[in-house]
Length: 519
Ligand code: GLN
Image 1 (tube, rainbow, N blue to C red):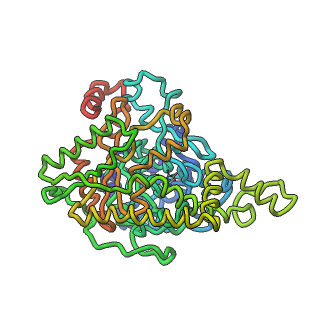
Image 2 (image 1 turned 60 degrees about the vertical axis):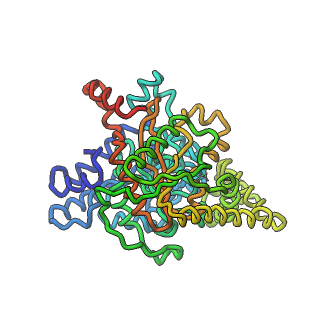
Image 3 (image 1 turned 90 degrees about the vertical axis):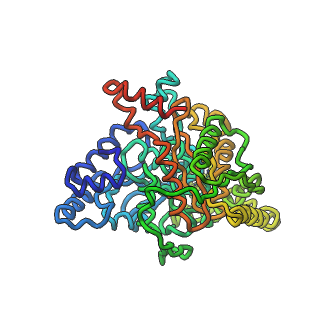
């Protein structure tokens, strides 16, 4: 039951083969069973059961609110949730309880969806590993699944792999079947990166299509709520629920009209798929390249045009993102001073001392580092050299995409991350921050240009860990993007983690599944 898609579960609920309370209990039990993943900061079990009970009443009366009625979902802990702690995985906000729901959370609740909890992340969404939060790192469920255990012969408890980040808890939750959908946030890749490493579908919608109201900001000009599901069709369904103008977020734009259902038999014969030359980046693993060419070949064989294209300013994207991100972080984080918001230090001999001590105690060194860098970039004498120049480079990066899409390319096909998930011990041994910066090389320019992109799982690596590919489309073509993604999904047949779970009972079966899906 838990490995169904939203559509299938919704049907089961309507047919009465399972009730919303039973389904909710199953998810809550599974959250308990998978506690070692550290995917949740807060489990909202009482609230979830109450909401499930209400859904049950509606379903029994034959008047469900929508397709999501009774469907369990999880929320990254940087979305405000009414009367539920919203910590951003930071000591600064460890006791913060917002008085309102973020618009996207409210929209899911309005559809009758059942919130099971708030998920773990990198502090204030800064990171690419989900290793940098105040509540400890998140573990990737695939690091415990049979293919990885078999292929590496390693003890999963001491050799677990990271989820990627910063929405690692949300991706781990959907991958480990504790929720059917989870909200992430994506500023430079934070939804797509963990989605790819955890083997789930992860959508970064066009900037402005989903309201940011109630999403605690990282980089306002790039932040978007992200959607994590187990199927592309589910992502499309959730996008329909969440998109559209919100009076509480002036950057929102009207949703383009498009059919809710993605076409089952999308025709790729008139499609032009671009392969950016510059995305053959240093550090890209051989297996990821294999997947990339395999899927490009699939398009070609099916009659699509596959073309090499150039996005020449990609080489500046990491530095450019870094300057802009830190600049916005420096101003966004100013509100957390221990008075208006957040942790207040006991060292308070003067107001200035109290501010400094509260911020020192409340933020981790990643956040403090970015505030310092951002303040430096914004100094009067540096502003033009760093901030203004980065804005100009951002325009060039955006123009690269425009140029390619205007030349007839419909979608770009790229890797999502450089390689499959790293072992925690390796990830933290290397210079974690440099690694997390490099890991965003395929995702960050998309945020700077405001475009929609999705990561789809395509195969398991030789170690038995998921590899995802990314598709990027012109602004507001989110549905078309998903149609192409679904085309890939239908052809690669990526397995659910549940296929590897009953190891002793279904040994032959999982050996077969492993053979089919491992490179
Ligand atoms: N890894 C990037 C960063 O640390 C992206 C973060 C995000 O998308 N929230 O800034």
